[in-house]
Image 1 (cartoon, rainbow, N blue to C red):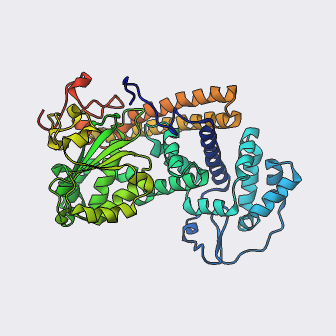
Image 2: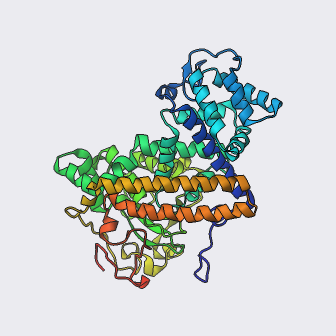
Image 3: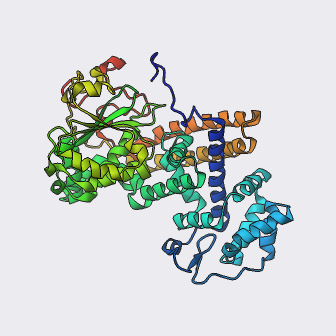
Length: 496
């Protein structure tokens, strides 16, 4: 935050990209479209692609079919040659592509190759140009890595993963998180992003289970004597961690009270579910253009009885692999001497980028470097007269989620908006930073706003209400206001 109160966007973020960084962003979108194109015309990758052992002679096909032996270099079929002629009219380039992908093409059925060729024949010239540009940068190994990662997926399911993860953000904001985390290496960033999306959709079912069921679902499970629901609600009721306020840079503050944790008090799955739920919820209290949070580990009253390496490793994995570039600063507050040895172990697990964001603070004076005293809660020595108190789910607060017809209509609208964003992005990629490129860049920014607006229409149909909805902080995309000085009554769950 600048001294005059204006916001200074950090380098490498949307709104503050160099020409080179913007070119990398365009190239990454090109690669995404290449994947869409391949999966669209060849159908979904079969599920056994995921079981490939890369250290054995076993090989996988371009779209997922497998073979126990490395096939001989194939004689290209007429359909293969026609496909190559569509991609490029240069005979030398055709031969280069044929050599590059010969082993992979050998594992395709004639029907798949014909389907791919027919799809190319129907594609507009600019799509072929983009495909040609991206293929020039891909090796067979890279393509194989992508298809192993995305086994069982189709172009439509990949699109759904991307737009689902975007939620209310500009799609570029999501993409740029992974690009920065992987030092602007396009293929590494894409691999990281799709691994994170697999984690969201396959491993943790964030948007299919955790967020739609939410706190009310956990309460229902608790009443049914289910351990997962009981343990989840125990943590949220005690306020083991919570969101409140902003730091000097406008970043939302998440406070973790380490003294309240004991490994035996809850099952590991509930800790991971609770952690994921809080991180996802925190995304909705980011006031644009803010993209990161201030995380405080309050170590007051901490003892060895509170130490548990399992959730620590999970939190690190979340912020390094699944929610990269989401932390602005990490404050370890009032750590006792016994934590020094523990910290040496934890520090060794951290990515250097995250480790550089960690600061040790003691007392109010140290915290004031990061948080204004009037915005720091009294529990941490500040002047903000607020205390955490959980407000239970209200009967019927999620009944609107039963209206699946409206939900499905909004989801179809979202798909249409996403396709218009994709079309505008293809034109932006094609025209680069010239006048036409700038025209399409502006157009896609307008469509990105439609994505945001659509999400907030959809939100109440797909996400169960949280504590922060009930307290009036999350308000359908409106600015989150934590303090009375923002010109609104504070709807706090604790003392005010």
